[in-house]
Length: 427
Ligand code: AMP
Ligand code: GLY
Image 1: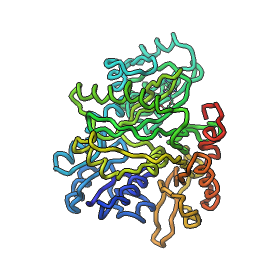
Image 2: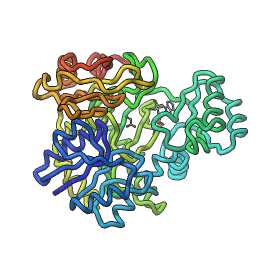
Image 3: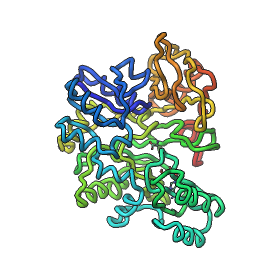
């Protein structure tokens, strides 16, 4: 088979890496990819949102299967378009992707079908929202409805902050039309977990759960990022909790979507908060998580291509998906300044100096004409390793990280630490 992966981050390098291991696969293409995918696949210089160009190249290269990484092509209807071309594609349709692209859509669905989520209210009028905020006490959570590159959720610790967030989103339109509607949520405290599942529209098969670290600094200090590291699986999210979340959230959501006439196929990512033993939905995504994928997929024993085909063909119930009982840790190396402004174009040294069983997933990297790999983004690499337990996996990653270097690189020193030390904190 020839398989095309769409996207160019750490998640897509991981997906391409896993697909390339399949005996069914002759060749992998990645659009646009990065220096890491260039080593295992052929990169195609096409943007993930240039759906027509992707369709054209998929025809020219006789692609047998397409896998979509990021949300923007899904939200623009890439799956509907490829279906109309008759090219098998893994992902959710434009209608089904609303579960991620509109938080109001997701909240209305959860309300209608009794799926647990934090108490909240939806507004399309700024003055109504402002009035409602006036009756709340901090902390409160203000969320823009639409896609906002992971920045559309503001946890306000004072009413001044909450009012500013509201006017930034609804009046100043800092996220454009994504801020035409807002959700104002009660602020929950609890432990967060990402539970990501394969689904063919009927059967739901959750992957191992993972935890993501969103803040730049150790102990969860500093600004929010796309994710600075991840580990899999978290001990606190027991098999019973996975089953509970599957039965109260994932399955009802997939059934609800079918009932609404928008069958849901692909990946359903539930960002959950566990409050007093009960999982509640903070967000849904229609894609694999980044950097969760870098910690989850190394533990997948079943051929990923078999799973993708079972989802597309609607026979996921006939496939037993197997996972390793090991643990996996992935730590992100970022450019100085990220998530604010940062410089790129620094040579990355030591990529060949790590132990054989440590994997380096590339994100913002670029292969120069001189054969040297340069930084090309804020999140540059995820360094990952499995181990028989979390301590072994984490130890391998942190022992190898100092071998890799680029100007201004930084990374968190505490990914998976709470899992090893049993620290009962949120970080
Ligand atoms: P979202 O994009 O909706 O997942 O929000 C991003 C992050 O904001 C989540 O991962 C949580 O850490 C936090 N968050 C979102 N909603 C809430 C809430 N109702 N209470 C507390 N934290 C929240
Ligand atoms: N790691 C969070 C996300 O992929 O949305």
